[in-house]
Length: 151
Image 1 (cartoon, rainbow, N blue to C red):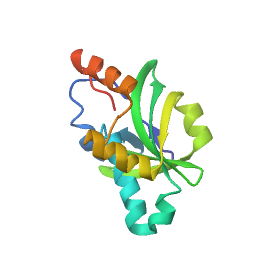
Image 2 (cartoon, one colour; image 1 turned 120 degrees about the vertical axis):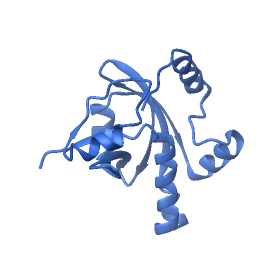
Image 3 (cartoon, rainbow, N blue to C red; image 1 turned 60 degrees about the horizontal axis):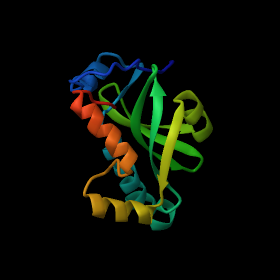
């Protein structure tokens, strides 16, 4: 079976993506909750693999280009892979892609990597899962002003 990544269109209402994925079991759909998904994956590592293993992972907030549009995105880098949350067949799954392939295929143009200790600190300061970097917050505010959302 071949799995494809959906050609996501930016809209004001992305609430039906999980439902759409149920009807299309060979396409990965964005969750539009990437910062939450990334933090959840770190929590999964901590609970299931322990503190030392979780310390090997990095939470990453960055900007990538999809279909000519720059979007903000969050993911985890762990063991040479990017772990990225997507909907597949109506369920949240984490796909593993080599870091090199992820950066090349998703055209990552900027990023900030956080260690586990930095994640705890930034989450405590901002009381949110991200993004935390001021330049990303400015982009997010501009998109919201325009009535757009990004995955």
